[in-house]
Length: 112
Image (cartoon, rainbow, N blue to C red):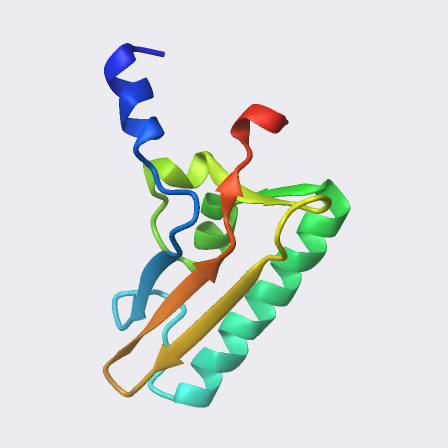
């Protein structure tokens, strides 16, 4: 890894929440708010089971399942099924769009 890339990753705040927009540009979006909430809950439950089965989960795994483009940091941050904070999320929306917040993601790439 080049030094510039390494420095960039050192500046990532692993204690910061990962925020993503979920709106009409997403192929999974519906004009029905209840559907959007159910979809996000379903994906997060499914991702929790993946975490328990695989013992790790990257942020980009979750973003991909939600239909949200990957982010560079998403392949470094994630959750382990043991010894870390629990995977958590929140979702708020209105008729115009919503925001998903992935909580408690930590650096995991170096522990795999």
